[in-house]
Length: 244
Length: 390
Image 1 (cartoon, rainbow over the protein chains, first blue to last red):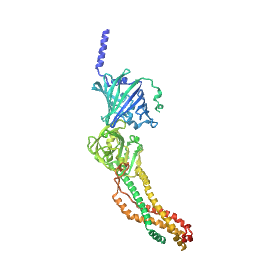
Image 2 (cartoon, rainbow over the protein chains, first blue to last red; image 1 turned 180 degrees about the horizontal axis):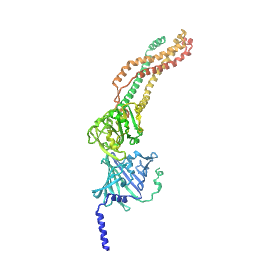
Image 3 (tube, chains in turn red, blue; image 1 turned 180 degrees about the vertical axis):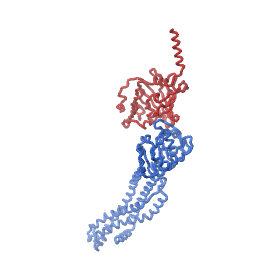
Image 4 (cartoon, chains in turn yellow, red; image 1 turned 90 degrees about the vertical axis):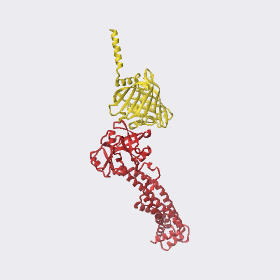
């Protein structure tokens, strides 16, 4: 009886692996793998513009999807600049002017420090499955890694990008590449994630390359130099008082 | 009459001193008329060009629309009120839909205003008909400044990225079907014009507009809670203010010139009164009242202005007439001033300007002639005849 149960169990497992997961299941797995209660990380942002590159260093504290605080550490010109995101609001503090300004409305569409990222891109915090219909389009190899290819099409009208296409590492279940499309189908932005490392038991890409496909230049690199998950972040970090 | 005859005889008798004063004063006349004429011509030409290219006779703006506040532009559009439909069909109105967008010339990102205008409109002189026909991409027209700045030419493709009414990005290529040349930078720099119905479709706002240009200057009292009438004076208010500011600036030059001329007349008067004390004493002794003598000297000073008007006319009229005919060429780069300015400005010399200038200079010359002449009334005739310095 016991042998029959083991064989039956093995059969179920084999069938389960043989069947392709749905796009929803893959996205759920990514959420599980990538999300954490909070994280603290230091990073470098290298903006490769047409006239040369600029490197910025920063330290960030994030809690869930809605709270984030970033302080720029270098270069000297940007040192002390701080950004605070609480829910759908974003504040910016510049030490040179000693003023806190709220980035809102059309200002959210501006580039962050001349990079290929807009403030709005940073503000995106809705779950993909809440705003997109996902469909598994097949399998592809990307940079020698077997990937699922998922296409996401907006199911609500108020999204910035109407379509997305993601290449998901089958074994580690993390995205390796994402393309963002305009309503008419034109490719607007491309993100490539690499240098995947196992950190505190989870796979995490530590290098992200953003490229505005309509702009000249080699895009913006975002390199995580140190990251800690689920640490104790004091509540005062996510208040406007921490900006000054 | 006797005073005038005497004044002319004395003035001409003074010779070179008189003619130097008269020449400097005549320069003031010509400069005042020339500079004001140029500003009047610029003002008139700028407003005329704006009417032809941009404003029409008047406009109806969406209540939220503020051309100086980029944040209001994307939200300032509404259904075109039905009252306009008949006028639009008749060609009396041209609705324009405006939104912000980004273009990527040579891989550089640049913010622009994307404007939709009816292809068949003839309210303004924009060559909208050049967008007629079947095109693989969205047909677009741009101004010369925009084309030069972004190194674009007719037939070039340009990627444009915009957001629909819900904020979702979209991007397509536009083909430049025409590059127009006009003197009004506010419809040229940083702007791309495409067909109205295409932009309405792109933004998903069927039959909506931001402004409605009217060929008439009159308020047609169209009842609409969303569109308000803006008259021609309001639409050209900025030009009026700039010209006024320029007028104050240029007036400094001719005020200095006028002051120099007035100083010269004043000095001449003081010297005359000092040197002609015996003459003054004799005139009073022969029966002229002090007032008559003061008047004689005042007229003598003021006659400088009359002679200067004559001398100024001799060389000023041909010079100013030639400029009124051929215009004053503007230097390179004036098209970047940000206001309507043509390559050549045709000055406008109105009768009011000429008569006003003559009266103003005559009045000023009379006043500066009178001030030193007042001293005569305090002179004692006996001392004056003796030539005693008083």
